[in-house]
Image 1 (cartoon, rainbow, N blue to C red):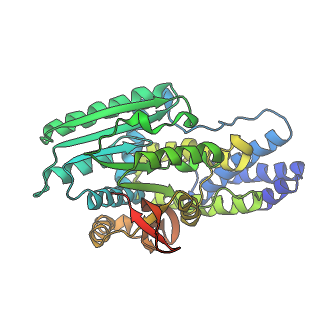
Image 2: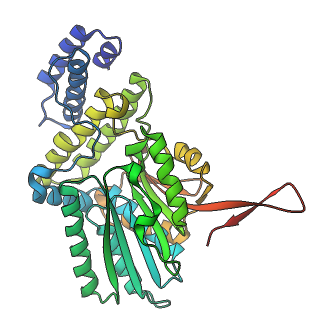
Length: 389
């Protein structure tokens, strides 16, 4: 904290001395507290290097993917999904929220704004296949890819894996499509080939927080999503404020959030998963923290905000938050109770949405949204709220 304060007041020589002491006392392979100190020390040293125009190493505004060895990336993220509660809980909650809103639909189209390994869609397929009433006739998933490079090939491979799984459980008709655009500003509703007979769902997992530094493009994308007229939008986001213009506030918020994250990794990942934990901490998390603390302006790509901020943002587009169901609550309790190591995973209801945390520190949120429109009554001044169907 003292080093961060010295960085804030631009006493870089003093800060560097404190950070040198931190590095000598807190190795990257030490205990949990030492690893947190090492991570944040690296971020602060990067900020000092940048502020003093010396050599520094920082990835600018882009999502992290382990391009050097995608197989290791797959293994690491799979291990993370299987051992750490947040991903399983948020995916179960999101999947159940989708099922609750397409319970009578036989043609379902999911637009995934940022697909990863697609594990949540395997869960969705299993649930749809076991549905007794209203058997699914067609499940279509469209994945959005922004930019080029390895992301497009990774997405196509995920699609091939989902197609293979759909065949094994006899989903009558499953299709997977990819929409690739150079930049968010190129997002258009017409790219997604929607059908009025489909129940359209938009799914966003850690998508919007990457574009909070680009409000014009984000507003335009939201207008295009509204034109698509989805039945529902399901959103998973980081439940933290990493967007404060105050460096001190941003540092404290980031420190508390990722200290809880490091503690969770230590508690949930066994010694056999040590290599994967180290990749998560020393590569992925360290890069995120460095971007949050050392970058400014558009270069700072990771700008998570809390659910209340998203509520205000979505209200501008006529979106109403939907209360999550009792069935979803039951599913969440089943997941969090299945592993003794997950006893410190906390879940809370926040005005109908779900926040997932570790020892009381919020980590992520799951929320469901619907667009509404207002129609002026001829006989009076009040607005009539009409839900899109």
